[in-house]
Length: 441
Image (cartoon, rainbow, N blue to C red; front, side):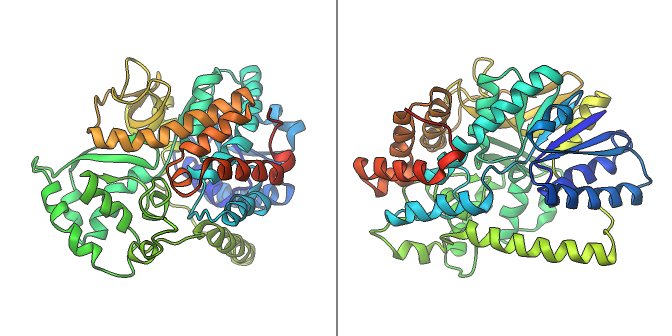
C-alpha cells in the first residue's frame, strides 16, 4: 500500500497520521510518500518519521518528494492521499486575512472556515487542489483523497463536485464533541460509556441531535438544565456553544471561538460588551500560529537531542479508514460528503458538503441518510452553506462578483459592513494576496 501525504511539512500532523499507520499491523509495511514545497520542513518530517519507523520495528519505507516538479511522482500509484496543506502559510496570508479586514472594523477569531478569512483561504487553496486532482486522475485515479485542510466544506465540496477524485473531508471535532460537552458541564463521563449519539449538519456546525446513555435515557434534559449555570462562570471557553443550546436547542461540534464568527450574533462593533460576556478571543488564530511556530522549534530541537517519543495511536480517522477499506471491516466515522442520494440531510441542498455518519468498508465511504434537521439547525447551516457555495462558484468561474456575493452573504461580514465597503475590502484582499490568487474578472 502507498500513502501520499500532501503538505508533509505539517510535521506534527504528519507524525500523528503516519504514526497511527505505523501502529497498525495492516498498514505499517506501507510506502509513506512525503510531499511538500518547503525543503526544510520536509526534511524535519523525514527525520522524525524515520526515527519513528525504526522505533516501531523498521516496517515500511519513507520517500520524500520536494517541489511541484516531483508532485506526480509522489502521487503515482497511491492508494490514499492525505491533504494537510496551507497555501500561503501564516506569513503572509493569514496575516493578510486578519489585518486587511481589521482596517474596515471587521474582527475575526480563527478565519479559516467561514467569514472573509475563510473565503480567501478557500480561493487560494482550491486552484492547488485542482492541480492535485488532475495529477491524481492521471497517476492514481482510484485513490481516496482524505482532506484535513480548512475550509473543510468548501475544499471538500469543490473536490466532490468538480473533480473525479473520491474525496472525504475529515475533522476531529466530531470525535471530541460529546466528551467536550460533558467536561464543560461537569457531567460524569461514565455516562459516555455505551452511549448512542447522532451528529449531523455541516463541518464545524454539526449538531448533536441525539445523545442517550447505554440504557436509552435521553441526556439532553440534564444537559440543558446545566447551561445557565455555565454561562455565569468566568474563564471558560465554550459559552457560544452553550448559548446555542439555550437558543437553538442543540450543541454543535466545533469550539466557541470558531462559532463566534459563523453568525451575526456575538462579534458586533455596536455591542462591544459581548466580547467579554461570551469570552470571545479575537485574533486568536494569529496568536496560535506564533505559539505553534515557536513551540515546534523547541520540540524539534528537543527530539534531535533526546530522541523521538513513542507514538500512541490517536483518535484521527485517517488510519482507521485505511484499515477498514484494506480489510473490508466496517467502521463508522463522521465524514464530510456531498449531500446526494436524494439528500442525506433532506432540508439542505444537494450541492452542499454535509457532515454525517458514514460507513467505511472495502467498497469505500458511504454517507448515511439522516433525514431533516430541526428547522432552526438547518437555517443556521444554510447561512454558512450560502457562503460555501458562492465561494466555490467564484473559484470555478473566476468571477469576482461571486466573491463579493459570498462576502455579502457571510453572516458576520454582512451584519457589520455595507455592500460598498464589503466590495472595497474584497478588492484590497485580492490585491494584498497577489500571486497567491488567480486572476478574477
